[in-house]
Amino acid sequence: MHDQPTAGSQQDDYYERMVLRHVLGERPTIYRLCDLVRELAKDPEDFSQKDGVERAVRELTKVGLLHRQCECVLPTPAAVYVQGWEL
Image 1 (cartoon, rainbow, N blue to C red):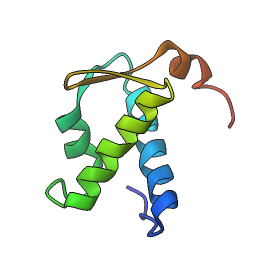
Image 2: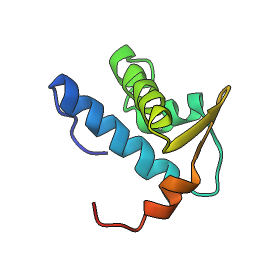
Image 3: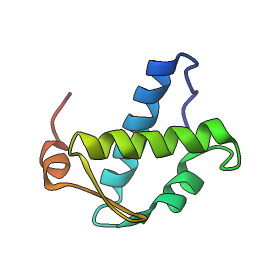
């Protein structure tokens, strides 16, 4: 896993990229939010790391790149479509 930045918005960007990359890399898997936290946080018991993953899922859902139904999280067709783009 990569080193984590310390600044607020940089940290949000870091978690959003990490979550989206992970979910798209494992397609067509449907994740539970608790599994994403367990797999992506270095220490799932650390509040800031757990919160970072949960905030990333929330923000990526708001912008239409993830779909969340209760505890299930999966990429939207839009996220899958742009997956190969060099951004």
